[in-house]
Length: 204
Ligand code: GLN
Image 1 (tube, rainbow, N blue to C red):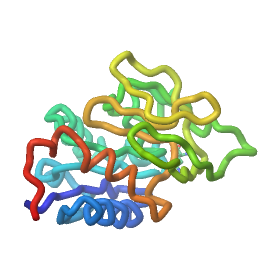
Image 2: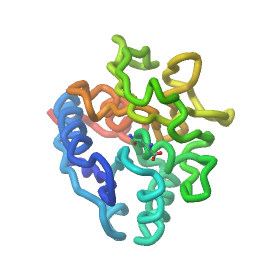
Image 3: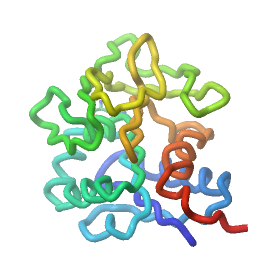
């Protein structure tokens, strides 16, 4: 069965996620079709979703205006995987500390926008991620810091003593940008190595 990955494309780094999910699919022997989501009605046919980085105020406003927000919430309630990165994490959080961001409450975590500090506006660091054998090259760009996380949230990675990758049920959210490196293991971990696909036979 071909899997359908939906990249939320109202704003942000869409093509990089599309490429990364294709590479992760190949690495898992799964044919993956990628669709871009700009309107309501597409999300219900997707097996998994990507919420890219970009500008969280703009992304959250457009998702609500277009009626896509409630479809994403229903996708998560159905237990289907989501990878949310950077601004995507901010949109997926319960509270971004900013009234201009209408969060979707997909992960039980608060965030602080642009909180890694000016000198660290943009940097790359190898980080240990639970479930990956080798460190992952994490690219941080004006990255949000994750604050309080709920009891059901698993911290997958930390940087500087703070969580930078978390899993809450079917949703993995990262402060950094896994789509900006050739390494597709975060996409593999969050979308293909999940309970949602575990029951399915892998095609030869
Ligand atoms: N600073 C952006 C925001 O707050 C996020 C940055 C990013 O996605 N690279 O929305």
